[in-house]
Length: 235
Image (cartoon, rainbow, N blue to C red):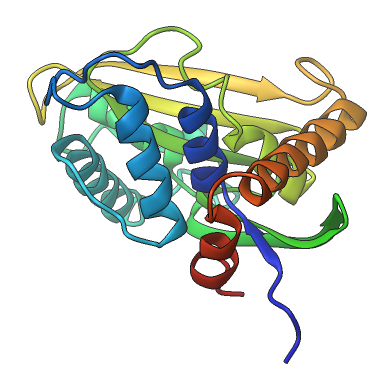
């Protein structure tokens, strides 16, 4: 049997980065546990494919399901409708903010998988992503949050990996900030573009360096490499 490839996802990279940077201060929910301790538990859960949910995640998932189910029924104003300006939402129910989110995701393909096999740091890797909203020239991701801060998502690895996987030039985060759930207070957009925010060469270097550092960390921290290879890498 061929050896399993090293599966690389945004959740894995995010868990490792959080482990490395989480402060050794008490969490708000349980002061007896520090953020660093929680980050360790979260990473080990990720490596073991044990996924715990919380209220914020559940609300986000429910919102996305609703958003996509409505968006799939919207018909473009023209035969070639692709983006928000091609859709008439005047008859759609919901708040102005919900319609804003609808306009952003209309006409896309939802929850599409993407993957790429490549060698990084001497390991055969499978880079994997699941795109919230996929178009023929861009990828969009839907986020929900109780407290939005400008640039909140542009420091993550998600858009870097997804642009690398697709070869696209543009990635958008469409963000709904809650007022009192399920009411949306405001809608935001964060955009990352190749050629403007980063060159194609820099993108490739970023992906390879990030993955190489993650693999090195897993190989040299406790028994994480064994957990990773045996439990996380299912491909």
